[in-house]
Image (cartoon, rainbow, N blue to C red; front, side):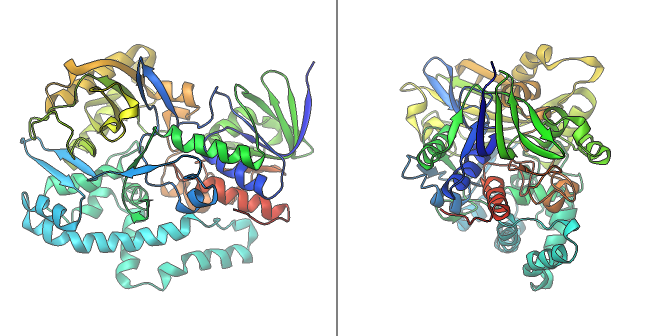
Length: 536
């Protein structure tokens, strides 16, 4: 017989944003329950053993965007979270047998750029300065609730207030904001840099989790989205959570436990309960019903409104808009167990060095990235895929047996839907082999050093983590699906189309990445509606 429970709030999905939202609500005195489909909380930010003795961050794989206020409020360091910074940001082998290193200080990166172009080295300080000014605007915007046009005058005042830092800025800031939000990555980068390595070093961020070419208008914004983070107070830095990305969400879980949040795992949600235009709770696939004053979704909006919400409860126009909500990040993830470190032809050596501890990017030019997208659009995946490889065991030996290593391979471009009716179930092994051969072209010992591998095609990402279309961002990060229009215009303030229904996932502002900000921002609005204040 089904059981009934009553809470102030129930959250669908125990990913990091759901945990963040639950924490703030519980700290303000609400009774909160999280229902997570899988047997572990964390969503895509989890650490799992994928080969005997080898553990890794199986989906989300690196740290930078996690908001420092979230870290402080939830006291994540007290619950065991420790993040170490990469010694350099990235290492890019080139097709002519050379390489460029990015990071480790301005002068070091300038010296690397001088190997290819004195002009690019001289331009670098101004580029960093201009990009950081826009990133500061984005950091400020990311912690605010987007205006709701239905609020009329109030919305206008809110929009003006949020955009005022841009309006009062310099003409250069005005132009840079316009360029970054509308131009392609190539259109933004080519006026700054001449050489392929310099353009590729920055252009790679424009295609991370973005099923698009660096020539696609709007791809410059995705570049910006990946640079507004920080590690241990250093802006723009990238790092590794000791114990993998699961260390973040397990620390969050402990914070939630102490705040009184009730967490249910292996508790997939079947549907929302709706009465008279209001969300009144959820029904689990087990048949259990949970009654709540507020239902908060941490899943992709397309899943929430296409599967979990009764269609007769939604306005037809809203349903039409949600059906056209675009999800496709072009992502293919692999985790590999290695007997030894990659020995790169351009920088030989199998002893752990700073390039092994960085993000190794195989995408030597914007043209290479463009061809990868064109291939994927026509054939389903790239003939020469874009690959970022991280080897976290070089800074975190707990992930692999002594002398061995684990590597994360984050790969683009791979279409969520293959042409000619083909299935990823049949194609995943061939695509994985292609990725390994691509890395092997630059590090010839790579293929033979592989002891085991875990493959996550776009279809696997959807089935394992609920990422529709394999979209790690919970929706394309394009201008028509950002800020007040994420996931739809009129619903960018974390409130859904039903009374008592809210959204707190990456399908809301400020979008994808392990930031915690959708969860925090949503909690603020939920508490505002409840007449309560946020508490750390």
